[in-house]
Length: 81
Image (tube, rainbow, N blue to C red; front, side, top):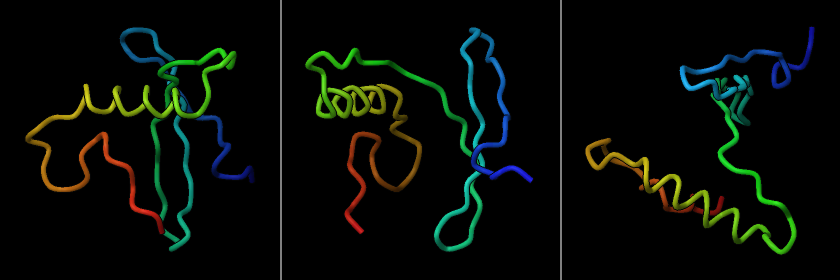
């Protein structure tokens, strides 16, 4: 049986964007199903992790719905474990 995190599941949405569906096991034994798609690819010529994180933060903030409920806001970093 293949590693569950690399099982070949996926689909194209109505706009034609390819999504990869990934299954992974958390440290506590719970299972998660994630819908993954590439938002942007930075060239790597001077655009490092800081630029990628800024892009991710902006993307999340633009899609955050103010009535989504309690929890961390889209642009907020997760607390260190």
